[in-house]
Amino acid sequence: MARLNKLEVFYHDRPVGTMALYQNRLAAFAYHRDWLADGFSVSPLSLPLEQKVFMPKQDPFEGLFGVFADSLPDGWGRLLVDRLMRKKGLNPQAIGNLERLAIVGSSGMGALTYRPAMVMDKRQEGLTLDEIAGECEKLLNSGTSENLDVLFDRGASSGGARPKILTDIDGEDWIIKFPSSEDGRDIGRQEYEYALCARECGIEMEDVRLFPSGNSAGYFGTRRFDRKGQGEAGKVHMVSAAGLLETSHRIPNLDYDILMRLTLQLTGSMEECERLYRLMCFNVYAHNRDDHSKNFAYLYREAERRWVLSPAFDLTYSNSIGGEHATTINGNGLNPGTDDILAVARKIGLDMRKAGKTAADIRECVLENLGRYL
Image 1 (cartoon, rainbow, N blue to C red):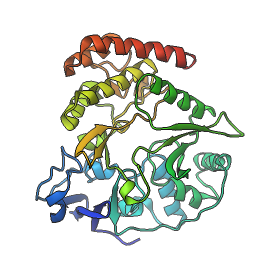
Image 2 (cartoon, rainbow, N blue to C red):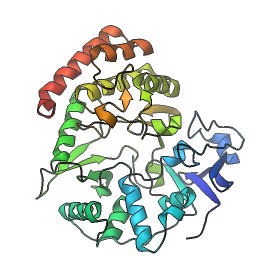
Image 3 (cartoon, rainbow, N blue to C red):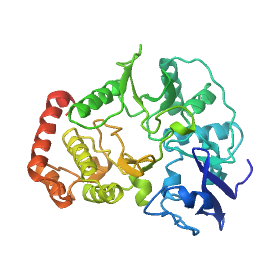
Image 4 (tube, one colour):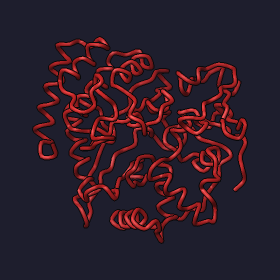
């Protein structure tokens, strides 16, 4: 595979800027002159819309800025890429991040695309969801699959630990998940019930479905919130909290106080802070403790020229390191309660009477709908 020293970044087929390798380890970035005239900052804290060369740090994203690292698959997606490289006689350890972004090309999450694109061999085959789940299980257990090319074609650009495919459902882009080696077979039904409960709690969710299975209670699927139509014009720019803050989601180093301040700074809206507050309440009461910095994302609404918090995603009964929350609540990750929740609300300036009622309502809704999981 040819070594890349430069990569062009695009948004809706418009040139955004150029990444160039510096000292063979840092991907420096500069905006395109046309983008400077009528574009927007793709990552306001790290890459303000200025005419200069921006230099990233080596850590935590191996010499990339966080917004571009968000385009790279991790977990399941990276496993697929690495396995396919080995199948083709390539050493994944010798492949740099510019090459990995080139492999992503136009297939990544969000709206940023990368050129020149490197096309790995792809093959479409008509496997059922149960057959795909079986192939995912084989790959996780043995490291091999006879249908590796199919899994790569349908899931290599995805993030997160659980196997998944990106697919078209009735002309819309969806994600369908499958159990990981650490999940029970009915994890799909659990995530589906969590999503329905979150929506009942007033939390914005994309459409969800439980797809039928002959081997389990079903596979969880959700419509993608980074797609609002077909083609390049339908892609929505997104950045995770990890990408914005240039911090690794693998290290529990955030508190909801920080996320609140980030949300207010980025969106300028207390309504968006209230949306985050509802999600925090849900995560505490529903024991969703894998609430790391890549599980919070922000979308750029170009027509309105403003940022908003994305719909909630990846909501299940879960733990992070040591069984604690990955993002602490008022400094408490082990056993946060309503007092900690209200302290976060008070610090950001939410209406305390409303905040108290919201917390009580969400706690009641969670206990009624998800009590059997808690």
